[in-house]
Amino acid sequence: MTTARPAPEAGSVAELVASKLREIPDFPVAGVLFRDFTPLLAEGAALRAVVDDIATRYRDRIDVVVGIEARGFILGPAVACALGVGFVPVRKAGKLPWQVHAVDYDLEYGQATIEMHTDALHGQPRALVMDDVLATGGTAAAACELVDRAGGEVVAVEVVIELAELGGRAALEGRTVSSMLTL
Image 1: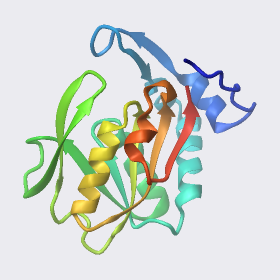
Image 2 (image 1 turned 180 degrees about the vertical axis):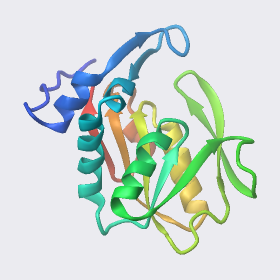
Image 3 (image 1 turned 90 degrees about the horizontal axis):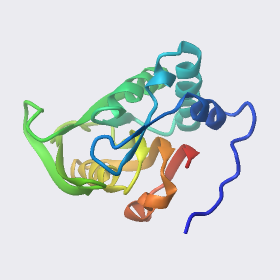
């Protein structure tokens, strides 16, 4: 059952995000409707508004931004820069050159493994985990587990878009989750 959601408030960041989305059917596999936010990235004022919105909410609350490959690599460093904190990448298996923590997890359309360097959070334990979309929650939950294993504390999980009907928040029970736009 789908619950009707109110339209984003005029002039809000949610409305801005909604206006810049492109929907691509059957990507990356048949049956998946991919929400592409790259048009938002292409417009400087829109990108700035999103980064500023996130940075405002986490100023003086975090020590590091943890970005999930690949689109978490786009907004994560910009937010980290705006906050004057570091950035830690969470990557697909086999992409990091040092010792790693690894977590296997389920995707909406398969399985995967992500990794983070074992020493990534030294001296910066309060982490903001960032990605573009929260779907089933598997990737975000795996990233949170990596932060936990590295001795960090997940302050929040921040996404641009949440696909509510896929129930991703359930995989993040007990965690603070923030989304700019819920579809």
